[in-house]
Amino acid sequence: MEAINAIKLSKSHGKIWGLNGAGKTTTIRILTPVLKPTSGTAKMLGFDIIEEYEEVRKGVAYLPQGCNVDRNWTFEEAVKWFLSS
Image (cartoon, rainbow, N blue to C red; front, side, top):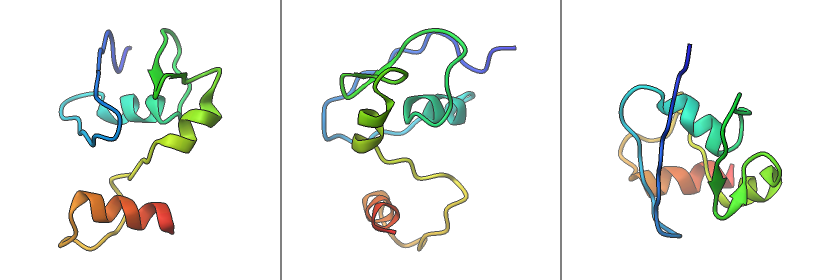
């Protein structure tokens, strides 16, 4: 069973974006890279998520759903808090 198939995302450096729909957790876990994909290729920030995963991890922030932050914060405030913890 496939969780995701044939996704193409493109965003400018320094932008924040979100996903909606099926497969978002798997997609994010692969791109951050927390989960190794079973097939295919992907790059984040110009780095291969498998071969250069350490460089990818230096440049991305992953705020999991279960993270308890102040509900009055903006998305940017929550990410900054999570990165500084």
